[in-house]
Length: 426
Image 1 (spheres, rainbow, N blue to C red):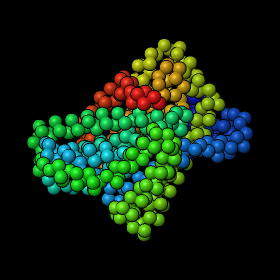
Image 2 (cartoon, rainbow, N blue to C red):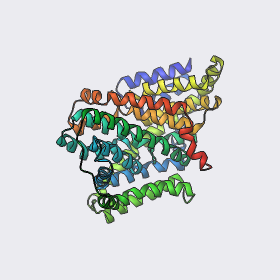
Image 3 (cartoon, rainbow, N blue to C red):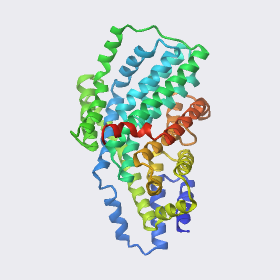
Image 4 (cartoon, rainbow, N blue to C red):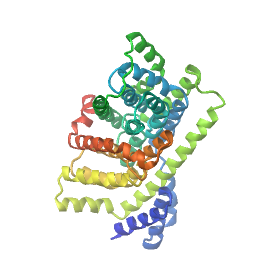
C-alpha cells in the first residue's frame, strides 16, 4: 500500500510538469513527514552522504572530456576516416555516419553529444548528395544511441553507482554489444540503401585511408587511455575519467588546435551545468531509493515475484516492457536511478548476472532516446535537421523496430554481454 502511495505521489508531481529531480525530492519529503516518524536530520544526512561516492566523480570528468572533443574537430576527422573506409558501398555517407557515431561514442560517452557532433556535419552533406532527409535523420538519430552503450558511458556509471556494480566490468561488457549493434545498424542501412539505390562515394585508396586514420588517431587514442587503463589496472574507472578529461583538453587545445583559450571557460561552464543537473537528479534519486528501502518495497517485490513463480526470462520480459514504457516519459538517468534499486534485488534473487542486467537496461535506455515524447535524440535531430518532432519520429520508427529486435537478442543471449569480461578474467 505504501509503495502505491509513493509512486502515485511521484506520478502526480511529474504530470504537473515539475522536473524529475524536484518530483523525486518532494515525493520523499511529503511521504516521510506525513506518514513516518523519520527525523529530518536523517534526510539532510542522506542528501550529503548519498553522493559521497568516489565513483560518482567519473560523471563530471567524462562530461568534460566529451565537451572538449565535441567543441574540437574530432567529429569531422572521424567522419573523414569512416568515409574513407565504407564510403564506396551503397549508401556510403550513411554508413560512414554509423561508423563515425560508433567511433565518437567511444570518446564522448553521451548519446545527444554524438548526434550533435556527427549529425550537424553529415546530415547537410547527405541531403546535398541526394539522400532523403528522413533517411539521414533515422540513421544518425539511432546510431547516436551508441553513445551510451560503447564505453565510456555515463549511463553505465549511473547504473553502477545505483547497484554497487563494477564500472570497469560494465565498460568491458559493453564493447561486444556496442560493436554488434553498430554492425546491425550498418547491415540494415546498407540493405535499405542498396534497395533504393542511394549514392556511393568514390573508393578511397589505402594511402588516403592511412592519412585519414593519422588525422583522427589522437581522438581515437582516448579509447585506449580509458579501456586500456582500466583493464591493465593502471587506474580505476574514476581515475580513467579524470585522465580522459586531461587528454581531451590537450588534444583539442594543443594537438588539433580546434579549441582556443577563449573557448575553454565556456566548455568548463557547459560541463559544470550538465554535471550539476545530473548530480542533483542523483542526489534526489538516492533519497528516493532510501525511502523505498526503508519501506521494504524492493524486498517485498522480490518476495511477490518469487511467490508468483516468475522465471528469469519472464522477469526480464517484464523489465524490458517497464523500461521501454518509462523511457517514453523520462530521460535515461532518471529511469535508471528510480528503477535499478527496485529491480536489482529481484534480479539477484533470480540468479541474473548484475552486469548482464546493466547491459539490458542500457540498451533499453538507448531505445528510450529515440521514442517520443521525451526522446532526447529526437529533439536534437529535430533541431539539426529543422524537421518537426512528428516527422523525426516517423523517420526513426523503422530503426526503433530494429533496436527492439536487438534488445531481445541481448536479453536472452547473456553470453554477448558476458563473454569478454569472463574471457579477461574480470
